[in-house]
Structure formats: structure tokens, C-alpha cells
Image 1: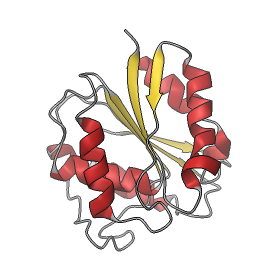
Image 2: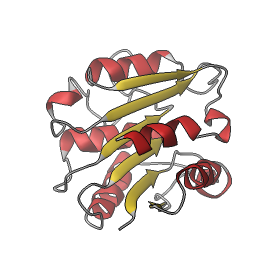
Image 3: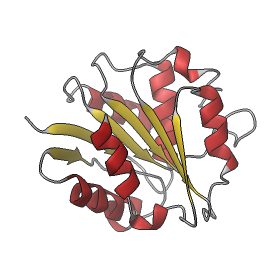
Length: 182
């Protein structure tokens, strides 16, 4: 049986088809045929709403099997972390991988409908590995945001990638390596 991955895109006009599709292609190339990546287009990517994205994610969770791995980029990572804090899926997750996500809450950016995460790790299923990635060359989201997530999820593995931009230079080889190791 293939390993199931749900990839949650970032926000912005054309992100699904012109930006994050390159991240998905890199991940698929690095992981090979023993993994299948689901890559749904999130509603209103050019003017995202937390409520709409949360509803879409909860619907996606219902179609996943135990052991599914969640991978998210940028705003998709922010939404994913907040949804997991509010309403974790019923299935047993294999891992959570979040890249270049803006932290919504104290110390980060205002998040409208997204409440402060507090200590997210207290709300996650024990034993689920969490990996956080951020490039030092990210001009969109300051690197400090990954440290705010690390504070909310103290058991998370943090990978700071030297010189990588917000799209991690379209190279998810480190993510794939970590994903294969769980």
C-alpha cells in the first residue's frame, strides 16, 4: 500500500497552479512511487478565508487513511496548525511537515479568525512527529516565525535552510528525507 500525503498549498493568486505545484513535483520526485500526494486546490486562494480553508481541510481529512502525512506550505501551514489545534482529525497521523508558515498570534502576524495556538503540542496526538522548515532567504515570512511555532510545539524538529527563499528554492529534498525517516 502506498503512503498517503496531503499537501496543503499556500495562499495567493495562482499559487496552486504556478507556485506550490513545483513544491509538490519536487516532493513526488524525491519520494518516488511508494507515496501518493493529494494536492487539492484550496478555495479562494487569492483572498483566503480561514473558515473556508478549515472546512476544506476537514473534508480532506475524512478521505485520508490512518498513517497519512500532512505537508503544508506558507498560509496553508498556518491554517493546518490552527485546524489541528482546534479540531484534530479522527485518524492517526503519520507526521506533520510545515514549511515557511507565518505564525498567527502573539509575536507573529494578526490572524483574524485564528486564535493563539498556545502550546499546540498539548493538543496534538502524542508521538506524531512534527517538522518545521524555513529558509534564511525568505523575503515573505521572517525566519523568527518558525521559532514561534517551535515554542508552541516544543518536540518539533526545526530545519533552518541556508539561503532558501519562501518557496525553499522549489527543492523539498530535505522534507522528503525527513518524511522517509518516520
